[in-house]
Image (cartoon, rainbow, N blue to C red; front, side, top):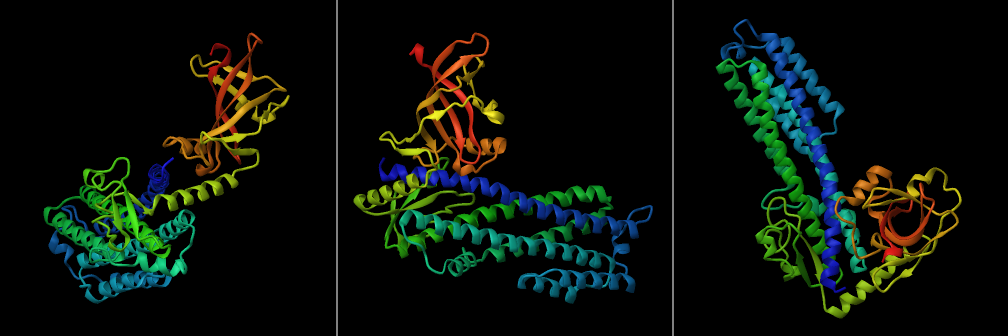
Length: 441
């Protein structure tokens, strides 16, 4: 296998892992926005419950001076938030702003209470982004060390500087609080319009929910863009510290025309620039890069990596075959396989009939041909589905095959067959299927 194919397959595998992780990141972002929305809706409902008349709430009614009791209640709430939360400096600045500029009328007090919920939620977002981006940066340093052979010193300090660097004239935290300002302004406008037009709380809630949806989409897009940015910067620093002065652009399988035009092109590491010749080229970009050197050096490194992967295989592995497979020792079919009996039934895919292995026989000529330890990743979604059904580690599933003797439950006749199955070291072997009957070939 040449180096181009190897790097492409390796980055494709990493892309699957990244997509899986980003689904979880988006779930967390959604949870944070949902929590904010729920609390803000409670504030608005409470406002209507307190001040509404039969005709609803007019703007003039909303702008009446609040009581000292309401002011004191807000003060206690703000004090509790500061006491119970370890706010970032950006969140503390927002809190100071709310306290300093709040005008003492009913509408402004409602806005201030909504503001507290926004500060709390966006502070949570900033911390989550910081942790997630740092983890991605450190993981990429570790991954590149496994590829290039050397690690980067002071990873944590370096990761922190990468995560908090400015990109297109703003840090990720600046953009998060910009979204807060945009959301705050839009909510203020919606509240005022709702009061002028006499809208009821339910109608107002629908509009506010849409506003939150737009802001959440912005946050999800920012997360994906920043993940790509920190990964690219970690790659660049890894290349520099390992003596590589060139890299190759690797477009993802579903890349846009812009990224497709860059695929397999070689660039200088010192000129590596997201948006120009490295990911993110645009929002939602998931392309990657790989170190580029002379063929001999890369092929030598490939051989070293393959040797390490083979060495890390679980017991039972004999050696890597010449057709890029991992030979396995013969598998004994014991007289009783106990609780695993169901797993050891092989299904004929053409008929749906189940067969059992003949007790006391062996599965011979067994080998792993895809998954962990080979150059061929499992098809997208397969390891995730297996882990969901049986447990185990998504990255450790393998696809294997061998030759065994099956017996028909009804006829009692024995048939030699090539069977395929999946396996994971902590789960065992599952999903045996008859690939072909050997006496028919």
